[in-house]
Amino acid sequence: MTAAELITATLAAESCCDPAAFLTEGVHISELTADRASNPLVRRFPTPDDILTIASTGTGVVVAATPQFIAWATEIFHGMDADDAFSPDILGAAALHVNAYSLRLNGPYAYNVVSEQSWVDRSAPSGYALEIGGAELLQGLNPADWQNAIAPHRAEQGRHDAVAAVALHADEVVGVAAASADADALWQIGVDVHPSHRNRGIATALTSQAARAVLDAGKVPYYGTSINNIASRRAAHSAGFYPCWVSAFTTAK
Image (tube, rainbow, N blue to C red):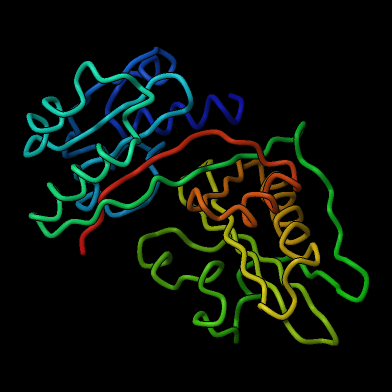
């Protein structure tokens, strides 16, 4: 299974629909089932928060909702042009609707994946060194200093950090990357660089080498950012990641 095929299968499992929906033009409505988390493809996020999800891999858009919201979602999205599903008007209306139920609509976020064929070897810039290993490299680091890379709540959800990379300058940690095992085959990379060391290629090097370690483990690395975080997206693309899907989703407030 290629990286793109795995992503399509994962999104379909999480949206409780046939993978073909993501490969077919238009907006497709799907009802979320209570047992969806039992599918091994589903990422280990809190399913009670997933009341509404909107996702696309570039062709079809799948809007998935729980029974409580399926009638509303059908009324809003059925027959809509796929290009309009992520428009500010539609997402704004959806955000207002779920807000009444103490939910927040997040996104849209842009997600990228990398494969053996697309991966680019990026080394640390002059004056810096990288260390690659497991979660032990994160011990002693303050998560508050590296919020995009270290998130203790992931372990509570079963998304344990499986790969870590740190960038060193004069023996001081100035950048961190970590890959969490979000699913059996799909690991997510998060990266953070100290503000005084940004724009020097450190994020790209960390992303590249963390991705290499994930690939070597036989997993598919992915990397998500808000759509406006151009610097982060450039770092991922420089390491060989390519656009794969976009999504918006609810979480509890």
